[in-house]
Every structure is written in C-alpha cells, then in structure tokens.
Image 1 (tube, rainbow, N blue to C red):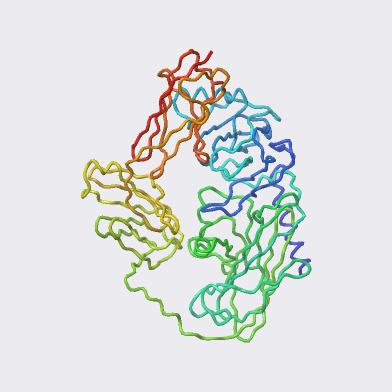
Image 2 (tube, rainbow, N blue to C red):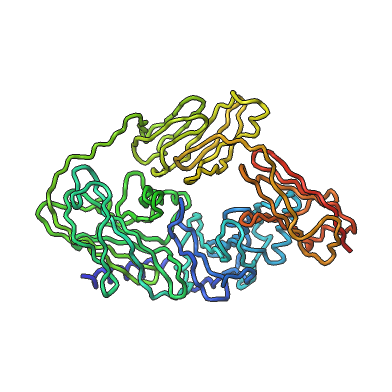
Length: 562
C-alpha cells in the first residue's frame, strides 16, 4: 500500500513539473543554493512568498538576473523587502530579488536620481519596457540585509502573469536535499460536542513514537464521531540546520485519500488565511504551528485539493481503522505518520462554558462595540465563525479579547478624546499593548475633525491611548563637530525614539537635501559622500528627526572637506 501511495505521488509530482520551464532560468547567485527559508514556509500572518537563499553570512555578493528581460519595478523601503528589484521576462514570468544592499551602477544611478528628485529614501518606480533592459547573466544588484531581514540573504521569487508567486524550485534550481521531513507533534480535533477522542472533546494531544525507519506511529486512540487531525512538521536540507517548511501533505483513512495540500503556488490575496490553516490559538499561546489536516468554514486557500469531507474522518462504534499522514519535501523525501483508531462510542456531558458578560459576535454581520469613550468597529466576515469575546474599557485601555481568534479583516478602534486639552491631543496615539510587560506598540493613528482618534489592527488584543511628549534622540557615531572629514566616505548617526517611534527624518548640507539611508534594525542613518553632492570646504549639516506624533529633534554640526 505504501508503494502505491508513493507511485501516485510521483506521477502527480511529475505532472506538476510539466507546466514550468526547467531550463529557461539560471540561479540568481553563483554560489550553491542553500535555503534559509523555503517557499510557502509558515510565517506570521502569511506564507513565505519565495526562497530565502543564504549568502554565506555576507553582503555584497553578485545578484544576477535569471534571464533577459526588463526592470519593471524598483522599490526602496525601510521595512518589508527593503531594496528590491523586479525583472519581467519574455516568457511572461517576473523574478523578484529582495533585501539588497545596492543595485548595479546603472540601476543605482537611476534610483538615486529619483530619491534626490523626491527628496525621500523610500521610493517606488515602474520603469517603461525599454528604459532598463537587462541581459541574461547580467549583474543587477548586490546581496544585503535591508528591510525586514533577520540576517544577510537573498529573498528570491518567481511570479506569473496573474501575480501569483510560484515555488522557484519548479523551474529547475538545484538544492541538495536527502533528508525526510520531521514531525514533532500530532493532535486530534473533535468537530462537535458529539465527537470524542480518548474520552475528550476539543483539541487532544496524541503520543508520537518514532520508528527505526524514521517514520512515526501514534499510540492507539479511542475515538467516536467526526474528527480531524493536525501535525507539527518541518523540513531540513542537507547543508543547513534551519527548520524549513514542507512541500506537501496528504492523509488517508483506511487507504482512501481524505486531504491533500500542495505548497507550490498561491496568491498574495489569500495568504492571510494561513491563520485558519494553523491552530491560531496554540500558535499565539505556545508558539507551536499545528497544520490542520481539515478545512474549516471560511478557509479558501487554493493550496487544498482532493478533499473528501473537508479532510474529516467519521469513526463508528466497534470499528478498527487506520489514519495515515504523508509529509513530503520538494525532492520527494517523505515521512509517514500512522494513527490506529479504535471506534468506541462514548458520551460525556458537554463542558459548561461561562459566557456571562461576554459579547456575542455574529461573524456575517458588522458589529459596533461602544463603551465610555471608545468605539470598536468589526466589519462583516472579520471572524470566520460566530464567537463570544471579552470587551471592556478601563480608563483609556480597551480589552478586546485575547489574540487567540484569527481575523480575516482589520478592526477599527476609535477614541473620543474631547476630554483632553487641545495641546495634548496632538501628542496622543493608539497603541497595542504587547507581552507581559504591556509595551505600547504604535498603531498608525489618525485624527478626525471631531476630536476622534482612529487606528486599525489585524488582531484582537489590548489597546490603549498613550501620550508621547519627548522628541527622538540623535547622536553622531563617527565624527565630531568642526572636524575635517576629507578622508571619510560616510556620515553615520544613531536615532531612537522610546514611545511612538521614528516617523521621518530630513538632512540638509548647506541647505540642500541629502540622502540618508535608514536601517531600523540598528537605529542608524548613513550618508554616503560618494553621492557627490558635497563640494564645499566648509559645510553646515542639519538633521531633523520626527516621531509619529510630531515631536522633532534637531542635530546641527559643521564639518570641513578638501
């Protein structure tokens, strides 16, 4: 039977390869591809949209276009992909290269011209088809660590004409991988109050046993009714120790396929539904990512296929069944989990849940929650299903349940601040209170005309009004006032803000705007004299840094250059 499963998978796998050209694109690097992150890997609020390729812990490696084409988009931002470039190719695909340190000279000059024109480090450009053409094997950029990157690497994507992102390995890129996926946990879920696993209702952790052949068994369970399963699994490649994502999931009940998931292509519009695919509550409370092998209401992920009864199994009394899970990586390495099930009818009084003083949310209806000076608006279909939640306001703190229920849409939080002095209102912002210490994390706060502050959030949790009256801190890192800097290439500063955070900054030398690159991970601003905008001997530098509520600080200095 296992051989049959393997044969079916391999034929399906081979068929999926046919639609993608495997000899058209080259690697974007000239070093071996060792992934630090795989395609569709499980991330916070999204599936990973590309392949993260290690750059030997270095920045500045050559990045090559994978085929001829033209630069169709360039974006420079503090967060996200940082410095990123998009190349559209004649065969209709677009390749994406992110977290770059800089671009190749012609492209770099193009970007800097736009930055100086707009007087902004953050820019986005969509060059015309004939504006920035590139040849095959051409160096287009250099690897880096810009944006929301946890270390030097290249984020690499291939997208189709519908802007769907596709597993780059489908295009023939080579990664050395002979290791089967690992399993670290398995759970059963009862669908309703008339279903049970080992005498329990709800989520039930099962005992996992690893075999000598590196597959897994689960200690035999007693079950009755409609149940589903969930698994915690990851993959590793030969040359890396990273716990990366898997590529495929299949389940079988007494030899009949119940569920399949193919992690090779998805749309950005659907990626937030990862929070329905995972056990969101367990992830938020224990940081464990359980992949649910059944599909619940509202989960419209295109990664699913060949579903039978949405992946659930029905267990009758006095039966003996076998449930199998097949976990695969891209290279066909596989791991099996076998769950023996004894059908045993049981009944148990449902647990009494106290919903006193809780608010009932009808998922398909919009909801306005009002208390004291606070309004929370929950759009229709923000929740996947109806639910009781906690809602209360104490002073200027809003308790909007625990962040254990996933949302499809953002909720809007509004404060009436008419009881504050006009001079104080401009210094107020709405913050999410994070962690045990309830650290205030700034939400993008806007002020409406009638003394209403408003912000939106993609999660439930605790929110508060916070006042910030202190400006950012600025310090020079590599020079002093009234010094000669003839041999310097860079001016470097450290900028920090303790509450609302840095909003913007503006630097001028002799009254002219100059480009400062902001690296939020190190709180540094850097000016490069190679921009060739400083030509005077005596130079007056002025740097103004502003936080998110408008507090500003100014740094001024004089320096000299030959």
